[in-house]
Image (tube, rainbow, N blue to C red; front, side, top):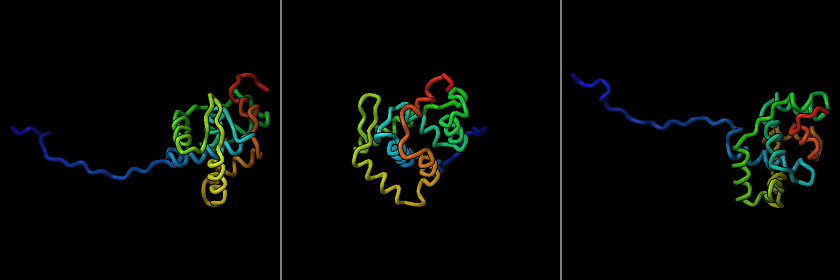
Length: 153
């Protein structure tokens, strides 16, 4: 009797769609937009994780706005730290778009030029740009740090 599993087969590579939020291009661009929105074009790694979480879904954006406004306690918004943010930081640093010093991340002149070009692209990252613009020109570390403490305002 012949083995039923002993049959010829082929592997065929097929394209697999990847969500935009998982692509390195989106991650790096959102990281730079976020830094540009922060006070002094700088933020801590932890703050970048909070803002990345806020950018990713409508629910997270809404929770972020409510905590900043004082309508929701920080411990009621569950912030998820994403290891891909650190990977995007490594890529951005390698391209000299950011400089890291300890926990601080600074947007470089080259990074700022990239953001300005990105801002001119009206149909690119519309939701992210609109959300960040709604928060004001410069987010403070105190505002973002509200998510990293369990004390209510």
